[in-house]
Image (cartoon, rainbow, N blue to C red; front, side, top):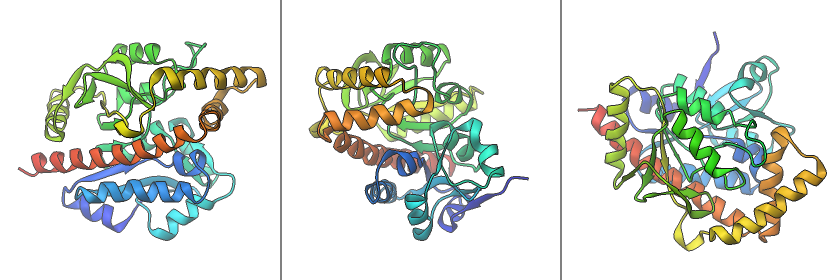
Length: 303
């Protein structure tokens, strides 16, 4: 039987039906350089803690599943050499091979749900890649199959957002705009695509989720939060940068699992790190909103 290792604070909160927020770790292992990766992860944890919820960063260390990290474990995963990116398909192989790994959206969701967590915060979900409608992230079917609340800023802007929006609809995944009618575009406040509903409060999101789960629907409640307005990048501005990055990837023949980190790095480079600043800010903001939602969910469940 596969063992899940819980941080003491996380286990205590779960035992008392307290609010806990899952956080992914590819931003640590593959998204940012050291020490910015560690500092961003700690910043996300701090934002969750501010709300009264308990943060639970999820990763693999030498094949062991970790749900919640002690300081020395955070330092370890932030500096480990040659970590693997752990999607849902990779969990078993990474455990058997005793690898260090950062969990993607789908990998984090699989572990978090089995660990008893119901709220998860990330930056942007995966989706349909530009130029190849058959290249669809494992995040989308996972969102259709696991009943959680996932807080994000929409799909990553490097993707085909209209196609991704269509797949979300096909899979029956409700897209809840948090205090917005629009689906954010990661770096930008709006993609020009609609959210299904506008939830004004964290309590409303929690009630929608519980109602859906009580009805027996298993899809994730996808809560989409615009990036902080003062750091958002206009969609038309960032689109030109993304197109340049996509063209360079095509010229270099970069495909598969390497394409997303390549494009994100190039967008950061071509935007003179402006996109990176926005990315870090929205990660922390999403963690805070997820904490608020987890607190409200805990209140309702405790009645």
